[in-house]
Amino acid sequence: MYSLQELLRASFEQCQPNMLLPKELKYSAIAGGVAVFGLIFGWVLFPVILKGQLKKEMALSKKTDVRKMWETIPFALEFKVYLFNYTNAEEVQKGAKPILKEIGPYHFDEWKEKVEIEDHEEDDTITYKKRDTFYFNPELSAPGLTGEEIVVMPHIFMLGMALTVNRDKPAMLNMVGKAMNGIFDNPPDIFMRVKALDILFRGIIINCARTEFAPKATCTALKKEGVSGLIIEPNNQFRFSIFGTRNNTIDPHIITVKRGIQNVMDVGQVVAVDGKPEQTIWKGACNEYQGTDGTVFPPFLTENDRIQSFSTDLCRSFKPWYQKKTSYRGIKTNRYIANIGNLAEDPELQCFCPDPDKCPPKGLMDLAPCIKAPMYASMPHYLESDPALLNNVKGLNPDINQHGIEIDFEPISGTPMVAKQRIQFNLQLLKTDKIDLFKDLSGDIVPLFWIEEGLALNKTFVNMLKHQLFIPKRVVGVLRWWMVSFGSLGAVIGIVYHFRDHIMRLAVSGDTKVSKVTPEEGQEQKDISVIGAQAQEPAKINI
Image (cartoon, rainbow, N blue to C red; front, top):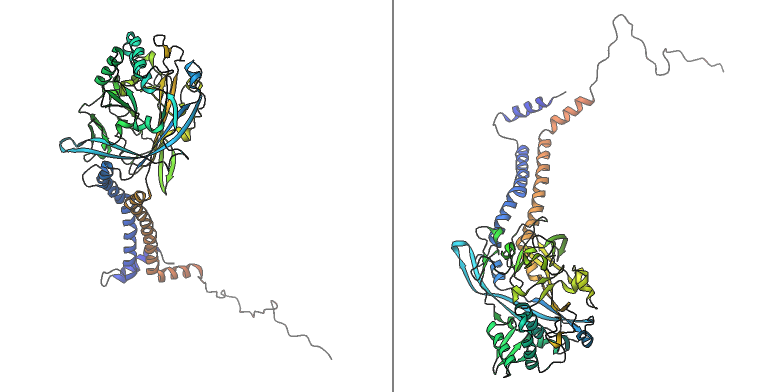
């Protein structure tokens, strides 16, 4: 029997005359090298190369695709508005519970761009201002909605005036009541009956051409303070709308964010607004700018990462948390969700309250310090809010799928594939004896409208992401297994083919070994019969 050492010695002696490997061993060595290269490149080198390339592509450096999309989003976002129509205004004026009917969505195409952009190489930052433009899209709005529908809802401007004075200078409420009678021509109640597009964008007229002391003094104060949503018209007329002042106008705030060239994990991080490294309207950590500007996020996200974004509209950071695995147009994504939170009980959010004993109910956030208007933010239909808020009105039906905040991220690049940011705006029905119109109101916080800002990457940009990231990744994934599998198989076949003769001899010698049999000494040879032990003559048969 041949041993392994004998096989190797025979092979060495066969190669010794010219010290060259036989052809089959050369092929075996090449195949083995391919397998090793597949292992090293596929599992070690390629991930490093991909990560390095992503770091370059995801930074906000000039002339990159990400920078171009960050500056001007090349497609419209979906901006939807849902208004609440008060069907029992007369009863609400007397203190009854409001009965609401939701009208919407009113669909607008929202185009976002950044202007007055400046790069700062010394600290790897970039500054800019925002400009949003809205176009009403009746075809994508709810069936039959044109924007000319009459909606009955609490008069935002009238209530806003009273609430602001009641908070800052309650002794002036009597004068404000007189001013309202002059400005709004002795209104019968605190409700407005307006066309949807007028209150949203076109504006409603606030008559400040009165000469009486109270209306004139109030209008002078309004002009001086610059009330949110108010546009000064000729002849002492004001025009008020919810979003009109935002439409196709440059936001005056200068935002500073990190470009991520030095450290890609800092990309888009807000570091200052109007040159100030933090706010001064809240307490403690709530004044910090935590997170990105909401249009770009760092790559390499894991399920344990808490992404953050800062909203300049709400003057606060949001920290969505991981919910589940999802997919979008064939790309695997991670879904993150968020809500307003419980400011009274969450230690991280208590600094949004002016006083621990004066926090709003669960699910509400007082926006007055931020937008200078007595508004409250909540989730639509009071989703995940104090049940008492839902009990104050009729007609709301919270649903996590329709009213929640959710964002689907592609985790490797950090690209938001689908996003639905939803917020509801609410107002208190101020109850006070100092103004006749307000003496019978309930004092409850009630909803006015809610919005949904939606993003969904179209097929063009999904394919771009696939070609830049996933197709190379999949090709390398297939190649590395092909190289390892066929390389290993080729190496084994080459070795077996080279030693085939020795292997065959080894197999034969091990299975068919025969010993020679000889008679023992002193014994006579005997005839061997196949019938019996001793041969006999055939029996004679007589016929």
